[in-house]
Structures are given as C-alpha cells and as structure tokens.
Image 1 (tube, rainbow, N blue to C red):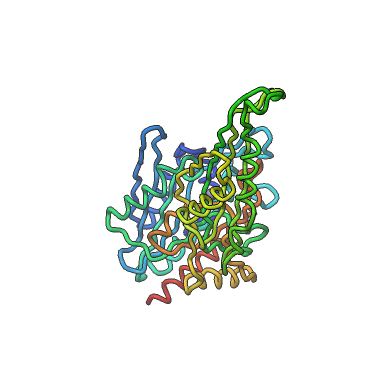
Image 2 (image 1 turned 90 degrees about the vertical axis):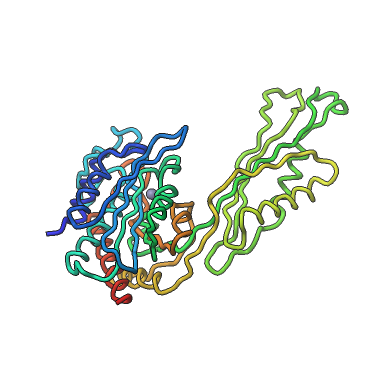
Length: 387
Ligand SMILES: [Zn+2]
C-alpha cells in the first residue's frame, strides 16, 4: 500500500521547517523515498554570512529519459500563530481542507509528486527511465544554499536531466487553471542625482536635484519598453521609491535618489536593458542633470520553455483529470525554475496559490488527490512516449 498524498502532506506539514530549519521534512522524504528504492543524498551547503542549509537529491533508475521533480520544503514563518484557526504545524483537517504553513507552497505539491512517483514505480518497477527529486530547504530565504548549488552538485556527479516539473502553486483560482512555461526576468536600478544643498530663499546659491530627478524619471517612463511577445506580457518598469530625506521646508536638498524595478520579457537580457536605460537617462539628462546610475546584480533572466510535447503531456494530464484546458502563462514573480532551465526544460504546475504565505494557508484534500492524479498521468505519458 503506497502512502496517500494526504498522509505525506500531513507528515510534512508537521515538520516546522521555516527557512533555514530542516525541521525533519527532508529526513521524512528521505525515509519514504529510500523505502521505495530511491538512492537518496542529503547535501548541506554553506556560504559565509548565510546559514547552512540542508537539501535533498534522490533518483530512481539509471536509464534515460530522466524526469525530475523539483521543489522546496522550507516555508515562510507562520506569523502570529494565535491568528490561525488551527496550529500552523499540526496538519489538521477541517471542512475537507488541510491547514498548515506550506499546505500549498509547497509541501502539498511535494506530497503529490511523491505519491504519484511511488504509485508509478509500484505499478512498473522496471520501467525504462529515471525519476528524480531535487528538493531544497532554501527557496523562501536567501536562496543561496539551495537549488543553484544543488544543481551544481548533481552535475558534478554526472547527473543529466531531460525534463523537470517544479511544483510551485501556479493556479490562481482552481486546480487546472494555469501552467507556467516561463518567467519574466527582474532587474533593479538605482539613480542618484547630485545637487548642492542650500537655503530655499537663496536658490541661486544652491542646486536642487529634484527637478533633475523628475526629468530622468519621466524620460525613463516616456515610452513602453516593448509591447509583449507571443508568450509574455509587455515588460514593465516601476519606480519603487524616490527619496531626498529632507525633513526641512526651508532647505534645498543635496541629492535625490530613486529606485526602479523592471520585470522584463524574452526580448531583453539584463545587459540590453541596462543599455536602454542608460540611453534614456542620457537623453533626458542632456548636459544639465548630473547623475549616477547603478544596476543591482541579477540572476533573474527571462526564460521560456516553448510549448512542445512535454508541455503537452502536462496540459493533457490536467485536462483529463480536471476537465480544464490550462492557460500557458509566464506571469508572476521569479522562481527556482530560472536556475533549473539552464539544465533542462522546466514547466511549473502545482496547487492553487490563493492562501500561500497567508494566515490559515490550506488546501482542499480533494486537490491533493487530483494533483497526484495529474502527476501520475504525466509519468504514464512521459515514459510511454519514451519506450
Ligand atoms: Zn514556493
């Protein structure tokens, strides 16, 4: 009798694995996967200035093709636990819903991946191919000792993946709404306009940086960066703060600072965007505004897994299980998929995200069964196509 997704999810929810604590979650997964015949590793990664983090890598089979399930067991803090209807780490069920921090993001998703994989292997232990789990404990925190290092570690051992499913909660409203086949990139820039401080009644002795900053920002926002692409919305530049830090009404401030963030599509790289920003600012500044521009380093580039047979397996499984034709989307924030996609195509599909990171995070028990059914159908189609 294979463990049910509910049992697996409840067991994981009872592990208090707030980043960077392992909380027993990876040990639990290790035990279950070993029992099913997986080879399991638990690499710990460190970096000066960040806490050590435990991770898990498991593989069943040694043949190709290799389908990898990826995810994280760490969770964000529960906040004020007394505001939860049920203890955030007790895995209680009420009204057909399982409560707990990580119920949808993403211990519930991991439970479904495990249940589906165990059921598939139980039915065909000698199938031709491999199933793996790449589970980090550092997604919600600094994300330094997690997926990036785990992928390097696996590659160092000669591991090569063919396709990956990341189980983040991708559905906005109901199970089957949305697959993510890519993500936008993210780039942050900072502008400083230098002026000269002085008395507001003697402006000829000062140089107010605020009008210059206004010119620069309107230059940045003057026209859209693009109009979107086949699978992406238009890139968006958002000014997130403008500061002079001036408490006085009779002083012209010395400098003005602004920060902006761009969520960009597959028309851009961080380099080409920086060139465009630079061009717009130089044009707006002319010879009159003295400013400095710095861009924060970013590892969030835009990527796309083009709709192909693999995306089709996932979409078909969703349709068969839920009746919905999922939207293929590239919306939302960044995810660990941006790291995995350097090694193999990734699609993201998991539970419904509505309560993620909230008080009373919860998942309908029925969704756990249906997501398990979807992953199970993907495994069937994936390995049937290969043999
Ligand atoms: Zn997550």
